Picture (tube, protein in one colour):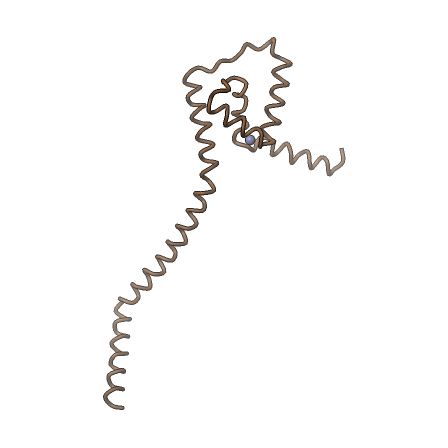
Length: 146
Ligand SMILES: [Zn+2]
């Protein structure tokens, strides 16, 4: 293997488990295709190379070893927490972008707000009031004496 392809290989295997859904796709072999999680995961696998690859590998492995492994059936608690986790993960994925945007807008307003507030606080401070009075006195004296 050349250095370049070795690097490429390392990069690929490093990123292989990057997708948050990878650990859940095994359930596709186990749950009914009518279920919401199944539909979501199938749709995801179609667009995610990592999960597609993982599922493919897993299918090959289970096909090879099917005779020896008793079929695992999820019990109700596990099923419920699985469903919850899948829908939470998708929610988080969809919301992340919007939340980041909202946060930025909110931060922007907070910065503008704090600038505005400190400006107003400065206006009301004693030094500023003295300055106003001084300015007013200068204005009056100019008006009267010139
Ligand atoms: Zn994925």
